[in-house]
Length: 613
Ligand SMILES: [Zn+2]
Image (cartoon, rainbow, N blue to C red; front, side, top):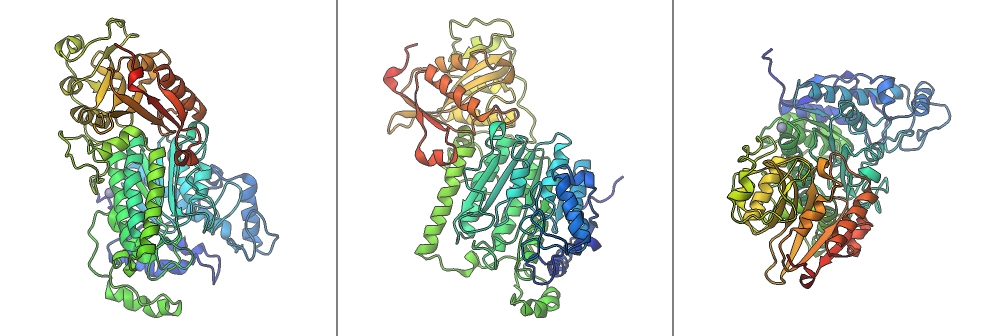
């Protein structure tokens, strides 16, 4: 059927306002009045009315005793407090709270199902985003965890999910509910737990075991403004998405990072929140075939901030420009009510004044620097070295919206995007080693059967172009992008040793260009395709590296096969053994890196220790 696919499905209906902890509670359904009005004004039409999720669906993540406790208090709000629900707390009981909580969950689950069916690319559920709810208790205005349940729905299809939480509070419930799952990457940027509920979300919360590296937290100091907040997102998210390779993205757009929010202390603007939504949209198209579910979240300036944040998020997903002004009818309709709550006048524009009109004095600048240093340190630990280097040296733009500022060397080739086809088939197998004069097969390794790939030393650009890169050899997730990055790297002076089977690269070692000032080069990646692991191939690749100057490496939990990661301890042990065997001195990584990844290591191989070839 040739129906018109809505640009971004808006999830809202008659029951959306049922989620109501009562007068005086900050998470008020009053926000839907001005919020949905403004969404309609920019062109959004509600297309999916939330209905309660089934108990079986809630039970994907919530415990049976918890669901029973919610139901008890839902039918008897005067009953004894239980499971985080009680008078005077963040989650006071109210009649019908089970159905209301289940309705929010149902809205997000049905929305992600519409995306999975291909009915729509994107959906926005402004009433969703209840990210604090835990398996067995309510927390922080949240009864059932609708974003975590939507993620669980996608996981039932075997899809890899990236979750992006922009709320000012740490997305602790979503992180906890998918903590052990290496197929869910949770990212949360928030005000530090030192100054704000729920107190968690430190950078050292990275996941455990096989899932180490799939919980990412960027805790920002109170007072962080729009500049550092947005810069941190642009610095980390594109590289994380490229590395992880999600099939679908779920995001939470809490509006409480805003400078006017009464409950928190960041100084973000709607301008930055809208730009963040556009970044998420870009990542969804680039890495997840456009599949993106956005939810609302916190936000307690419900007249001036929440409606504009929702509208900007919807406009990003609808791929529409931001109107120059908010409609005068909208401002007139809600101004008196907003004034009663001390949230007037209603803004004339969707975006805010630069830096929300705050002066960038030295104190503000110091906070921005601290925020950016947190983001840079998190990136250093959670993004693979090769991917960071590719951005910093201009080998590849992780985002085309806002290419990172690195040395401005433009890419010398047209780089494929995630959607591009794989590189053209390579030349016939046998021709590769003999046709390229710069390549020498290591003498001890004769060309032979499948179990014995040929090792090519110092692969040149022409040879590299004729070969294709197998999946899961090196980051990022898409081997076509990895191939393009390494081609640019070779042209920029990087040294690549490759193991080749037929015309396919099944293993590589990559050393960056030598830093001419100090004569040091950095080991950027060592990787072998799954079928060839545990056969000594990585050792042979390292041994085949041409002699050079001093070499350094820093190995963190980011260096892993994201599709099938090993346990964190095993990763560190193997890296240690491999590098020690190749003549590197191993020591613990620097103290700042170890605050996030205690098992990170640094390796140095002095030039005079280089084995002669
Ligand atoms: Zn889009």
